[in-house]
Each structure stands twice: as structure tokens, then as C-alpha cells.
Amino acid sequence: MVHLCTAPAPEPRWATGGRRRQARFGRLVGAPCRWASFRGRARSPAGTNRSRVALRRLGLSPHFARGRCLWIRRPVCRRARSPARQRALPAHAPFAESPMTHSLFARRSLVGMVHVGALPGTPRGCEDLDSITTRACDEARLLEDAGFDAVIIENMHDRPYLHGDKMGPEVVAGMTLISAKVAEAIDIPFGVQILSGGNRHALAVAHAAGGRFIRCENFVFSHVADEGLLPEAEAGALLRYRRHIGAEHVAICCDVKKKHASHAITADLSLADCIEAAEFFGADAVIITGTATGKPTSVDDVATARRSTRLPVMVGSGVTPETVAPLFEHADALVVGSYLKRDGLWSNALDPHRCEAIVNAAAAAR
Image 1 (tube, rainbow, N blue to C red):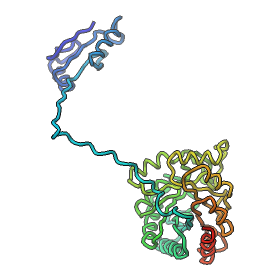
Image 2 (image 1 turned 120 degrees about the vertical axis):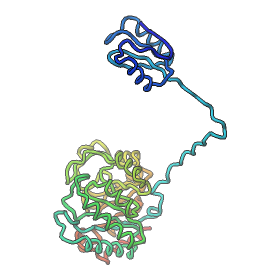
Image 3 (image 1 turned 180 degrees about the vertical axis):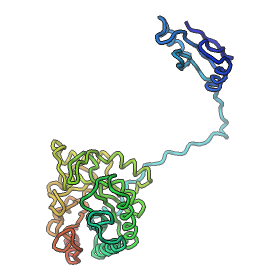
Image 4 (image 1 turned 90 degrees about the vertical axis):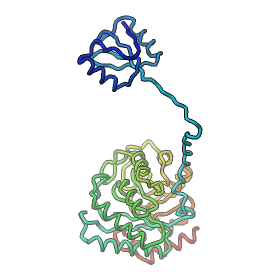
């Protein structure tokens, strides 16, 4: 049975407390109102569904209380505004310019690695932060003077690494201080990488210190690395975090089938498939590497990357003066680290003669 009425609304049969409940009901939905109540509890009698359809056509909506259904429609008041009082809506802001349109990849670029010393709190940390910062600034200036186009600041000596959110705040604090000091010491762009998988941390550091890009691990697809299982792709959370902190000007350069990792999980996906996924998910550049630090990168892999994407293609390991020319046929930038150190060992100090050799080879290949 359906009962319809108009305001003032009579008190429902199931209500207790009389005027007190009616007053509360009036404050909830406003008055005047139009309502209907169904008698019955868990199951409505036959014909109720047809009545409900009719009530919905009247613009009523159901509200349930104590096993009964109350159909309510609030009055809709529309008052036309005069043209003088109408507020103009702001025009939709255009999409931000891609951060990779800056001059870093305008030509074949050389990117040198600044391997920060072991930070305090890590297993090999035995220096104070001032000494680590001074050496990082000296290496960055040496690379700039040699002719490099950019540098990447990386906590390579913090091994063995903690992954992602497991790393402590002291790593982020130390990298922020070092990056800010390096920014004051050089005029070329710099990027940040925090191992392992500290992609949001690196993005925050770069944003705070003036960095232009970060190097990101596991941007797309899961894999097993030497620091453990990397089960989640970072793209979705990382791009949302970049928007959240207002760091759209910081580019995300992502490794594809990264070094120091097994990719058996994605063995049925080709390199081109992974590169296309990275572009689809919003990467700003892709990085192709060998199997480990200092191991050569296949020229065929770089050529495949060049054919598979419109994004800038970077080479992330194993660059030597002999491989600069063939790699530059397909790559937009070469990241050089191990070769620049004494005896070609990444943990040694920079060798100015090796830096000069790489720069001369790049100049000849451009």
C-alpha cells in the first residue's frame, strides 16, 4: 500500500518520539517535501515494484529506516542569474609542455655519472656528509669542464640497497643536500637516481634541488633484481606523485629491461613491447642497458628502441670511446660512468684523461 501526501508531512507510523523525530526528519530533508511510505518490512507485498517505478518517475528516491522505505524528493529551486551576475568559467588550461623538450636532448648528449660516496647510516658509510658533498661537487665540475652536457647524481656506494620505501629518511636528506650543492657548483643540467627503486624520493630531491630529470627503475612491468623482487610497476603512482608535488618539469627517464635483473617474468615480451608500454604509460625517455654496470649495450637493442618509440633513447651502460659512434647513430644521449673512472672501475675516482677521451669521441661522432 502506498500513501502519498504533501507538506506538512504527517508523522510516519513507525516513528517514535512524535514531533521530535518529525523535527529531525524535517531538518534532514528540508520542507516542504513530498514523501511516501511503504507498509511492510523485509519483503514488500505484490505490486510494490510497479508502484516503485511510478514513484521514481515522479522524481522520488528511496530512503530506508527500520526496515521501511521512505520516498523523498527535495524541492529544486532554480533562480536565473542576470548576465551581470554570471561568473565566467576559466578557460581550460592547455597541457603542459613535455619536460623532455628542453635542450638536454637537442643534440647527441653525454651524461656523466657522479657516484656519491656511501651516505651516513649505510653499511659502508664512514665519511661525514660535508666530505661526501665536497667530492661530489668536485666530480660534477670536472665533468662539466671536460665537456659533458649533463650529470646524474646517484648513491651507488650505498650497497647493499634497500628498495623503495624501506630506505631511511637519512638517504633522502643526504641526497637533497648534495644535489643542492652540486646545482650551485655547475651550470649544466643534472638528474637524480636513488637506489634502489627510490623513484619518488629521487623526484622529490630533484624538484627541491633544481634537477631536470630522474632515472627510474621498474617504471613498467615487474622483474627480479639483485636487491629482490620488484613486484609493482611505478608508472601510475610516480606520475600521480609528480603531479601532486608540482614537478611536471622534472622528466622521468626509465630503464627498460634494466640491468642487474632477471626478466623471466616478462620473457614473452620483446624489448619493443616493453618500450611501447613505457611510452604508453607516460615516460619521457627510455634507457637501454647491458646486463650489468659497465657491461656493453647492444647496438641492435638501441636500434630496436629507436624504431619502437618517438621518445628520446638513452644508453645506460658500457659506453667507451670505441662504441660512441655506432651508439650515436640511434641514441639521443649516452650515460657514461664506469669508463670515466681509473682503470674503468666504477668505484674509483674520476680519471680526467678518460673523460677527455669520451668527449673527443662524441665530438667526432656528432
